[in-house]
Length: 260
Figure: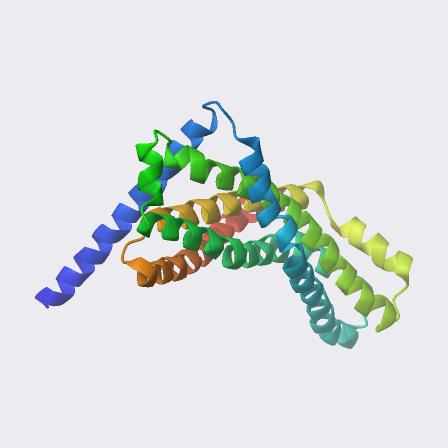
């Protein structure tokens, strides 16, 4: 019994320490973000890695999500002779939930893990200590460019994923279910509201902050050589996934149930 209580207490202390560490890193990032000089080339480099280089995998995943969503919806809608509403369901599902969440999870798995591995390697090889020796703040040099790149590029990727997903649904509805092209497009835009688009983009900004903060924190806290880098990368991805889904649940409840 004592051992169980000790383990429970240790986990509670760990989580409290983790929340404190990530909060501290977040406010340090906000502070250094406005302290000149601003290294634009480092921000552009990270934006390219996170945004441009993620386009192929995001395109593939979004296209398949749109196709699968159309097929699954059609299976039920055909029983009700309501195939024309498939376009509305696809558009709302993608813009409100699936687009932001799936894109964020893909980027977290691809870029969040890469950031943790990169910073973790720098940590265990003492390159971060070398930056401090050269009077360079690690948060400003390493975290701020990644933070800004995630914050700006994830909404752009989400808009792109929404479009590709709707195109995937279009292919199934028009060429498989026989729905007219103009009808699909009309039902898609009639179903969407500005609120749906805005809430989805707000989610992605928060998701981007989560991925950046978790990835950078885990990388900068890495210990134990190559094995430690592997553990930190795994922890980063799992933690990002959990926090993204938890944040999405909270935002959905707030936007559509508490303040509809």
